[in-house]
Amino acid sequence: MNAQPAAPKPAPGGARAARKRQAVVRAARDLFLREGFGVGMDAIAAEAGVSKVTVYNHFGSKEALFTAVVAGALDEPLHQGPEGPDLSRLADAEDLRAALTDAGHAWARAVRADDEGRALRTLVATELHRFPELGRAWRAHGPAGHHPAVADALRTLADRGRLEIPDLEVAVLQLYSLLVFPQMVFEQYGTELDEDLSERLVTDGVEMFLRRYAA
Amino acid sequence: MNAQPAAPKPAPGGARAARKRQAVVRAARDLFLREGFGVGMDAIAAEAGVSKVTVYNHFGSKEALFTAVVAGALDEPLHQGPEGPDLSRLADAEDLRAALTDAGHAWARAVRADDEGRALRTLVATELHRFPELGRAWRAHGPAGHHPAVADALRTLADRGRLEIPDLEVAVLQLYSLLVFPQMVFEQYGTELDEDLSERLVTDGVEMFLRRYAA
DNA sequence: ATAACTGAACTGTACGGCACAGTACAGTTG
DNA sequence: CAACTGTACTGTGCCGTACAGTTCAGTTAT
Image (cartoon, rainbow over all chains, first blue to last red; front, top):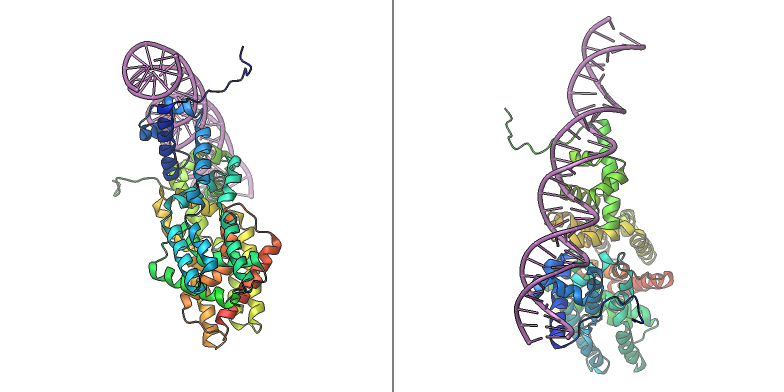
């Protein structure tokens, strides 16, 4: 007698199973990001080098596969921010201007190089109304996710008397606005911000920020 | 003898035809924006109160309908910027800070209220690889579209000695970065920027801009 | 002017073809 | 023995078209 009469599906377990499952996840993520939710399951199975039945043995339906894969991609720390290390150095930097400029360039490069990030953003933005469950991970992936780390760095800088920040929340957003948002917005419009302009934006953005908040 | 043996389809002309056509366009735009390209032609025809054949008599295929409707929506001046008028006043304003703040609030409100604009952005961003023809209108709809007007306003202000702007292109982008981009980015992530924070962002953004560029 | 005529545009339904989600099953691999 | 494969199958949904009948706008005839 099954204690759970509505036993949906037992997910396969084992060494091979794990390998196949990972192959499916990778293929599904790539294709979903490139083609959107409209991609066929046959294509995913083929890309993964796997039978379609195997896909259905691991994930019970297309929607389950989609949410699992996308939620997983959103939670990967890679997309949360490969620019973490710079922040710890920022609070202790001697030359604050140089440190900020370096951080800005790192951010700009990260945003520009992150093709998967852009695809992920547009994909979730379009399918969000069909998969509301993704909302949580989605908002965590947004700018509010990086928020605390930058806020900490700025706060310690203010505590040490190197900056004078009346409204911390605003200052954090302004830093983002000057250094990363232009990259993100233009990237969404497919217009590549050329190297030179990007350079000028970062250095001048740092200048602007320091003129406002330097003690 | 038809001089054009490959006569594709003559689009219907006349008073009634124009009405029906407009009904189709409206319905298609609404449904495409709400549901994406996946919406069925039957649904569009039903929403327009029109037979499906009529749709195919006007636009020959689903893709043609899509490109026509979306390109039309992109070209509508409404989405190009309902904030035009403020710019002409900006150059002549006595109280520059107040004028900039007003303009910022107007922009913020416009971006926030423009649900169709957001839907349009995500829709085109997702389907752009399948309809490359939209690229032109798409980029014109982006921030580079408003660009010239703002650049003119800032240039005249600089010519009159009220601002000191070494790099006009950067200054324009910074103004956008501080006043509009935060709204756009958060809006894309579904996170509503609350009223108070938005207010502080605008006033403080203007402060920052003026401290950098005021003569 | 009113009635009859005319042709283009529109309607409703039904259908062909195709792609795709999900399943069944018999056989294979580790 | 559990997981995987390959193929073939069902069912469904949707694009695009065919066809037979109806509405509409304008022109001509009376």
